Image (cartoon, rainbow, N blue to C red; front, side, top):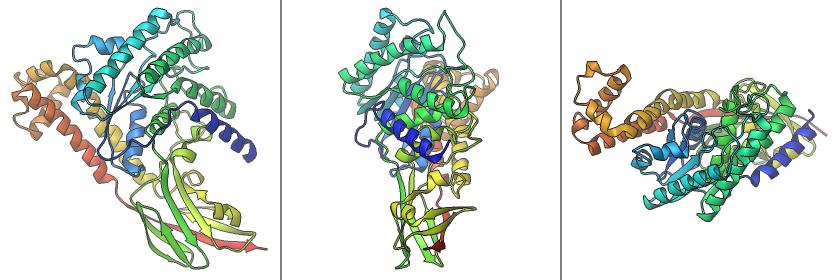
Length: 449
C-alpha cells in the first residue's frame, strides 16, 4: 500500500470514527476516579491500556483508574448479585464507563424482550450511579464479533449476530441520549476498523480474538481509544519547537529542554508518548492496528517543529537509535515523533510501568472486585477462620490486608476501607515508577538546493 492510499484511508477512518463517539469537554484530572465496568471483555483487557495512558501520557496524570470487569457478566447477572453496584460505589468514582451487551444477547437473535431488559438494566445503572454522586456516566455499546474467527451459534453466523448486536447498540444509544450520558458506539467503530485491518493484513488478522469475541491487543486498543476519546483526552503529549537560525529550542508542559547545541536537543520528559509493541501483522500486537485507527493523530501527538531552515532542504532527524529523512516543509509543519518512531527512547520505561499495571495492580483489582468487595460479608467471615484452612489466594489476600491494618477484620466498613487502601497503594506505586526520561533529538542538514 502506498503512502497516499494509506493517508486517504486514515482520513476516512477519522471521519467515520468521530461520529461513533460522543465528544465533550475533557473529564480527566487528578481529582477523578474512573470506574471501568463490564464483562470478560473488560476483565483484564482494555482498562490496562487506559490505565497506562492516563498515568503516563495525559496532561493531568496520574488519574486513578479502577476496573470492574466480571467474566460472563450481563446486566441481569450484575443486578442479580446481592452486592449489585456496591463494589463499584465503594471506590467512590466520579466517572463510570459501562460495556455490557454481549452476554445480554445470549448469543441469540435479539428480540423485543431482550431489548426491554437490556434497557431496563442500563437505566437502573444510570439511576444508581447518579444517586450516589457519580458526575459522568459513559455508556459503551456492545462490541462486535470477528467476521473471520467467530463460529456460528444458535443459527447465527458472524454477520447475522453482528446485526443482532446492532439492535442492542441502538438501545444503548437511546438510553444514553435520554439520560444525557456520553455514548460510545463501539459496535460500528470495531466493524469499520476491522474491515480496514483485514483489507490491509488479510482475513486471518482477527480483531476480536481467536474466538471471535474476546479481543487480543489490537482490539483492546480500539476500545481503549474510544473510551479515552469519550473522556475528552486531548492527545497533546508534547510540542518541541526548534529555531535553527536562533539556535533555540522550547518544549511544552511536562518536558524540559536541558541543552541545545550542535543541532542536538537534550530533553527531560515526565510525560510519555503512548508506546506500541509487537509485530504489526500480529493481532497480539498494538503496532499494526494503528494504521487503521487514528490513535496517534487524535491521542498521541508528540510533535517536533523545526523553523527557519533553508528552503528545499532535507534533514536527518535522529531520535534514540533511529533516523529518518524529512523536508524543510515537513519539519516546519511538524512531524509526530510518536507515530514516526515506534521504537523510541520511551519504549522501555513505558513497558516497565505497563507490566506493573498488568502483573500487580490489575491482578489485585480483579480479586478486589470478584473475591472481596462482591462477597464482603463472606470475606469478612474468613477473618475469623484458621488461616491454614482457607484457599492459598484467600490467605494471601488476608495477609496483605492485615499488613495494612492489623484490625482490618473488625468490621465490614473497616475491611472495605482496607481493601481500597491496598488498591490506592498500587495506584501510588504506578505513579512512583513513572519517572522522567532523558533523551536527545538530533537534526542534521543533509542537502539543499
